[in-house]
Amino acid sequence: MRLSKKSDYALRALVSLSESPGTLVSIRQLAEENDVPRRFLEQIMLELKDQKIVEGIPGRIGGYRLAVPSSKLTVGKIIRMFDGMLAPINCVSKKEFETCSQESKCRFRRLFLDIRNYAANLLESYTIEDLKDLNLVKNKEIDNI
Image 1 (cartoon, rainbow, N blue to C red):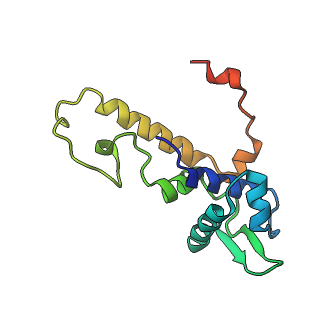
Image 2: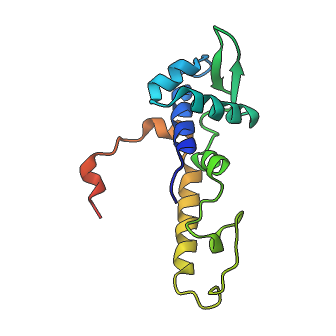
């Protein structure tokens, strides 16, 4: 699974909004705080608004705020919204399943199904609220495995 820019930027913006519950945050401020191109973020926020995840108020003093409590909004939901499937290969995907000529004898399909299930469960267990409290990753941790 690889996270798209859309999912990445949406998650950044949602965490920012969760840090100021109920407060309107301008698109300019969201873009600057999260190092996201403003026009691209505008498209993302419109999609989040269409899904009733955020509320948008137009105008000079307008902005965005969460429409859903950050403790009820899972990371998995946001990633699925923008990226679709979480599965590393289509033959173990629920939503984008594709048959494969090797299904009956594939030696690694089980592994990828387990990876999909683990990743999906983990992403569904984390909320936007949880992301605020996570420890930041240190570069030396990346070389651990």
